[in-house]
Amino acid sequence: MPRYAAIDIGSNSVRMEVAEVLSANEVPGSGEKGTGEGGPVRILASERQVTRLGASVFRAGRISPEAMDSICEVLAGMATVWKRLDVAGIRAVATAAVRDASNQQEFLTRASAAVGTDVEIISGQEEARLIHLGVKSRWPHARERFLIIDIGGGSAEIILSENNRMAQSFSKPLGALRLQELFLRSDPPRPADLHRLEEYIEERIGSAVRRIGLARIDRVIGTSATASAVVCAVNRIPRSRREESDRKRAATSRIRQLYKTLAPLDVAGRQSITGIGPRRAEIILPGVAVLLHVLDAFRMPALYYSGAGVRDGIIADLATRGHDRGLAQLTAEQRKVVEEMAERYGVPIRHARKTARLAGDLFRGLQPLHKLPPNYGRLLEAAACLHDVGHFVSDTRHHKHSYYLVANSDMPGFTRAEREIVANVCRYHRKALPAPEHPNLQLLDADGRRAVTLLNPLLRMADSLDRSRAQRIRSVECKIRENDVQLALNVAAEADIDLEVWAAERLAENFRQVFGKPTTIVRAGS
Image (cartoon, rainbow, N blue to C red; front, top):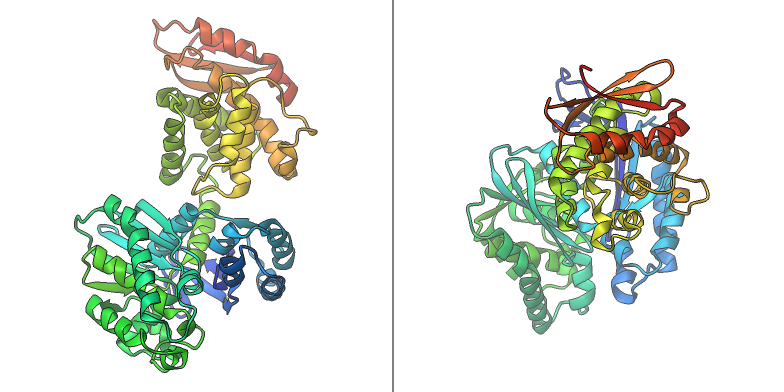
């Protein structure tokens, strides 16, 4: 069974998980959890180390040399674990603290070398998507409207889920470690500092509360170590049995009482409370304050805890990509991201969708020529929707503006490498062909550069086949012949497609340069 690894470099701790995705007929037992997106998963290795990476960032704006050395040592140790487990895929991500650090590039270089794979900084939106995916894979609520609150070290993600889909998400600078560094520098904290903290939290969550509204919410699920500690403390579950807190409930009234109990205590007093560990006690107070303000704002009677997190979302995401390698289309979530971005930049959505559908026809029909794995079809579909976004900046050299906008946009559901491939395919949908000396191509590995070269003629052809923007061509049938590639266009009998045929025929030489065969354009049935 395929194995996947996830590494989450957070502001307060680093987590690693390696899991094996089981076949659908295997019954989960000891050491197994959830359903996964591709089936049940068995955890093979799981580690967590408190590193306080964000402490120096939130104080001075950069990762300190000591923190960098320490975290690279932790990552190197984790590398020895995942490398011996023969994983089929791995993703390592960094979140709020690294997003904010002025020396993030130095950190990424060193961290990637230490852990043995590229570390990518993910946005708050992608972090929220992975958290939601993790919760959905471990504890699905298919017919509920529920809220997820994840309080990390640097940020808090507030996520609304409806019918198992992420409807809205908000990333706020309300991580427990960040708030501790900004507001609570004395021990025990001064009442005036607590008052400033509470006012800041209320102000920061306001926009999310207004956007989500007060319509019915079935439950609030808390993830991350703060929520675990709160649920353990309320239910008097000792740290040695904290796994028992998964799916446990804590009433809002009990959480409020816990906050009142914690507020006057110093760190030693907080450490004495059952369920709160010694390191968590240092930053528990601002975390509880955030949880309590969110519960009060939405008038929710209780919090439920889920042990899921970013790492579980990564595993589920990797498993889905692995199991769906035969699916050459965007997922519903990816398509929503892409189409919303296209509309935001003024792209005519009917043309974008038609170009994407025709590009899909070409990708599938010409697979014996390009021989790309099916998952590249998703990236071609995304590029087909987004290739004209550069017109928002200027009609002149709009293809280059398209590259810049896509490469620098937040696209939850796409990895950094995938986004860069999509941007490059957009870049070459007109004018110059991909060339090794182009700086944008040099950001890709050899497989990525090859994919851009092979996808380029397909996007150009799909775009040309809707040259009139009238969606006259229903679909394309591809026939690879000895001396050429015949593209048969399915159209209504009365449709005038002279403009589309003219535009497509102009691409014959471009097609021949890449695939060694020119194209012949005909009406289907002729």
